[in-house]
Image (cartoon, rainbow, N blue to C red; front, side, top):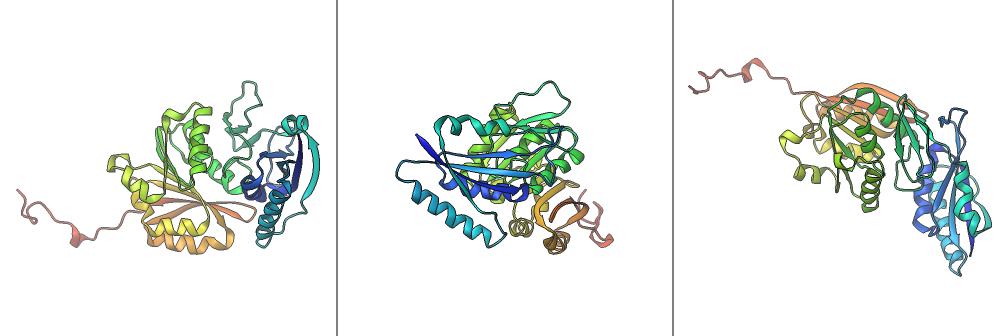
Length: 317
């Protein structure tokens, strides 16, 4: 069989969004090639080649039309390069693109690799992910901001809540960095399945509970003693705002911390102001390109002297 290969040369910021669009219609799969430095690290400026494959079986024109239509809608938000097309043989489809995939080094301790690459003994914690899966492969700045923040603030033994888990990359990283347990939730069933599969692939499934749903599902699953020390959410800004309005601060332990990412620079002020009203205090902000990662801690309400009662005043013996 021959295949129609559709490819776009993008920066990492666009790669995941385009990959998600292509994966809806490309029955032959989606692949990613990237340029890395001599140390195997992906920089913020690295170009990424995203490829989709459609079998030439009489249905390729309809699949191509759907892809082009979806990319056109995406291009109304941000300009995309021209889609390139070529026909390739079966053997090329199965193996050629894998030769170019490079590991992605993030922060000081993490390394992301595809399943077919093996690495020698290194000091980094290795996360194995299949390229082209659900959102969250380390290519997008918002994901890197989360991973770097996790590396810096997670304490060994912490319990973690991962809202919008995508591929499970943040949950897996949290365990490798020393977390005791992770509750991972997502409203997308594909993401739920991807997280379960990746947890198994990385041999951390016993530490990660994956459930379908969002904050309401967490409320059902959570007891007071199970509240997390750290919440991480790498989602679009309007969803983060909804989570804060839903009382996100109350879902974690007193003095707990929250890492929020998926935020554009112009969205920061509104989110920080709403967070302050929701008993969350901004303690750190990080940036890459136009994206921001914000770290908050839970701010307990102040108790005025008039609210304090002694046992005698309250009538207790």
